[in-house]
Amino acid sequence: MNNKVLLINPPFNIAKENYDSSVSVGLLSIASYLDDKGVKVKILDGAREENFSALLKKEILDSAYAGLSVMTTQVPGALKISEVIKKINPNCKIIWGGTHPTFFPEQTIKNNLVDIISYGEGEETFYEIASGKNLSEISGLLYKDSGKIIINQPRNLCQPAEMPLFNWDLLPREIL
Ligand code: B12
Image (cartoon, rainbow, N blue to C red):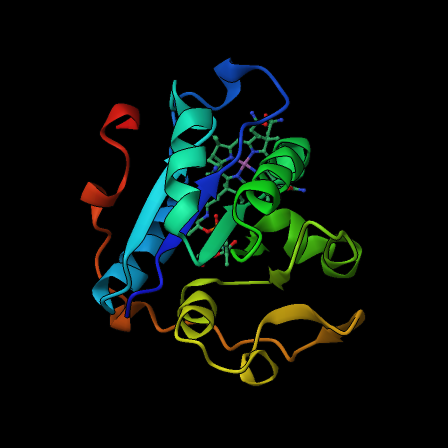
């Protein structure tokens, strides 16, 4: 599969001391799953990588999908990043997942900067999106069709025993 996926942890809007000790396990899990299935995937960490803005502008150019992991404290950062993506590569589909879009899916999908919302676990949902499966057939997401919001049914929980181990090499070296 040639469609590159860029996964992004947006910066937070509260003090750095509060998150410095942790990486985004959610994104690592999705990246490991996609990588295991042969999807080209790259993770950028806006909360922890010094040259994040420059990397984003470079990596987004050849990305077909951008996945943002969003807690509520990351919404302002995620909006800024989505705006940059829409300007630089308008063909790139923007998918928001994580706790904020899971708690507030309908409010979040209304924003023009967001193309798809994944709610709940994102590994299989993202893989199906990146595989080009018709959005109407993918559980666990919301999207817009001619301006109308479509809410798909929830996805069953994944089976942990069937998931690949985390591939830590997929995280930027700088943040380990
Ligand atoms: C570990 C953790 C942290 C870590 C790491 C966060 C991170 N970036 O991953 C640290 C310590 C940094 C952290 C900090 C905070 N956290 Co915290 N954290 C957690 C915790 C305990 C587990 C998250 C986790 O790793 N889960 C395991 C992974 C595998 O699951 P996941 O992250 O949910 O990801 C899955 C799905 O959500 C989805 N998904 C996630 N991202 C994406 C992206 C895409 C594109 C797609 C398709 C899917 C997708 O797919 C993933 C795989 O299935 C949760 C509680 C919980 N039980 O979930 C709270 C939680 C996320 N945190 C929360 C809060 C409030 C905070 C703080 C604001 C606390 C504070 N006052 O400082 C700060 C925010 C940081 C900041 N500076 O602003 C809230 C978020 C509420 C909200 N409205 O967003 C939660 C839900 C706890 C709660 N119940 O209140 N947190």
